[in-house]
Length: 428
Image 1 (tube, rainbow, N blue to C red):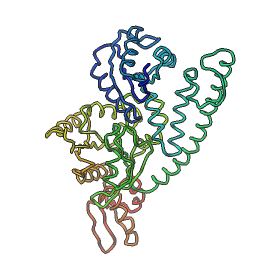
Image 2 (image 1 turned 90 degrees about the vertical axis):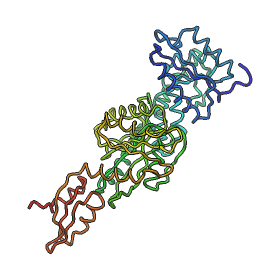
Image 3 (image 1 turned 120 degrees about the vertical axis):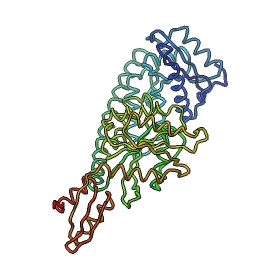
Image 4 (image 1 turned 90 degrees about the horizontal axis):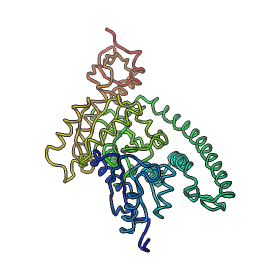
């Protein structure tokens, strides 16, 4: 290995069982390159490998493994990164044969999550996912566990005793993290109950990572949410109030971005932010209109929503980044038509950066919220004008008439407001 070889240069490898998915391989490697760029790693070569069947030792045959290693040597790359999931033994075999750090897609995503976690809950969730990932890989590198005791990697006797000690240490840490997470989840659930007790509709912004969800929330709410041109820049749920054109408002939460082949344990680990999609009254699905893979990203998002049990919720589709120079006239109309052909949804085009289309988005949110509410007539006494104001804030008042015997409202309101108005339902 040359002196110029560094761990900030990587060979990217995608292995598939047949060549039918070569386009998906290239898309996957492009996405993996973006993930590594978030970590400051430069992809210097991308290799697609087709095999008849996966091999247990290296995932590929020994000859193909040597070709990959030679490519890493030729490019002075200190890392080999697979767009596949490697078993612990495969990862260990690669590092021994290549004498280079070898990562799979799952470990790359874990590292990004670890760098971007900011709240106590997110850090605990990342730690839990890391411990679960590392548990079967203890013999690979003890340094991953920040171990302070002695012992030699891969030795017998005392090494095996140390390995068992490390295993007990990791299991104890997993139990400890789970207990702490349980406490944090109880606190979060209490805050959610307080929020849902307020008669205001709630929405969740979902979509593929780096589609511009945080930028959109900033634009429609004035929130100061972190915005970076990186994958998974936002991990913690952020809720902000959004004013709608009819003077009503809703609470909208920004959620973690979805991604192709997101490891299930990461979905489990970040259920706090993903739970917002299940408890929300409606969803805003943000798509990157400048991406050549936007339909695949849309399908990934819908698949994850279905897995979460949120696929049947009212959805407003938003095509973002229409100001991008790669977006041609008519592209967005075609995209919206394709989406609407497969999903009963309103499609709005906008730019979170320039503000183009944002008012149309607010109007679409208003219509979506009101359309999901039951319309009814109410007769309020004048000393309960606070309820009339509540109907204006949380729903859509179609008609309001002030008479001698009180206030008559024809309004579509959310369930929580409807419960407060129930005693004044006008049945005449």
